[in-house]
Amino acid sequence: MPHYLVAYDCNKPGQNYPDLIKHLEGYPNHWHIQKSAWIVGPASSALDVATAACQFLDSNDDLIVQAWTEDSAWWGYDDKGTEWLQSVM
Image (cartoon, rainbow, N blue to C red; front, side, top):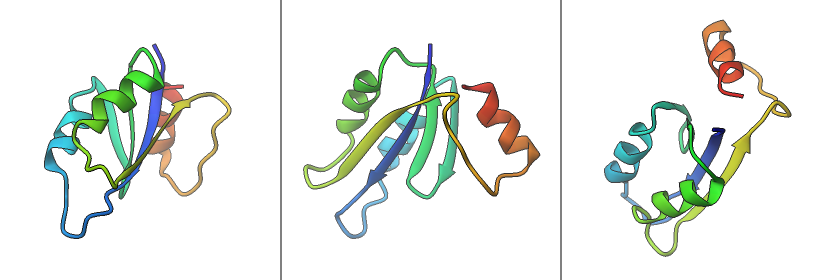
């Protein structure tokens, strides 16, 4: 099963969404890759990942889930990070 890039904006000041973070950490493979972006998986679909995550967001928050594929690019991560990113493609 594939992995997914999950990015979100929590638009209510002062929110840190600990339940969302705990949920994302529950995936067998997960990496909090940037401030409000994770790669998680394996999972059956982007819709499943989004639906599960939305229960932890407010109605004014934003979320996008995109399949992490071989047609991905990044810059600035060390060798260990690069190896992990490549391993979940």
